[in-house]
Image (cartoon, rainbow, N blue to C red; front, side, top):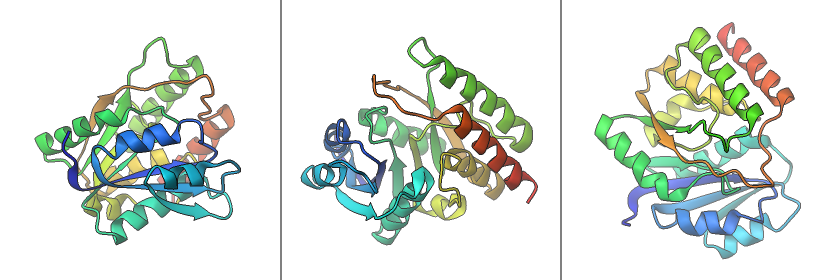
Length: 222
């Protein structure tokens, strides 16, 4: 598979030594450069990422998912990326689907493509409930037109990134990115993606969900 010129991948990672190497090596088949943001990991995440060939940026203190994504996307922009794809370092996303996101972007002349996970029997029940809630919540308050508002598998142009750049440091980044896209006129489309749930899957908790909902309300009425 030919690499997409000007496409950089940003992978936020905190204590992801188990799956990260495979994610990086597969991702490198489709992009020009892989940037891994080691968010103050306590394991060999940074070392493994460097050996796999990624550009590694390290946070001395934990800045959360939103902070890590911003660090990586800012770096990609400074290094001349034309487009940025974000995916998790835990192997939940399949890098071989990156060309599918690129194809969808070109076909629809879109500025951004947001992955939508299949809601099948393999998805944890709490994840299904949470995603359904945020779909309705986001549609009602912000007019967001994607069913899965929380996945981290996303593609956007460097110009679109300037418009959707977020302030959230935690999991609320996923919703804020969509809100900013909707409010700034960024043309975005969904694309179904496969999701792999490992036995050590972490994900968001109920408390995280409440924090996300609160953050979205503050954005709505600021």
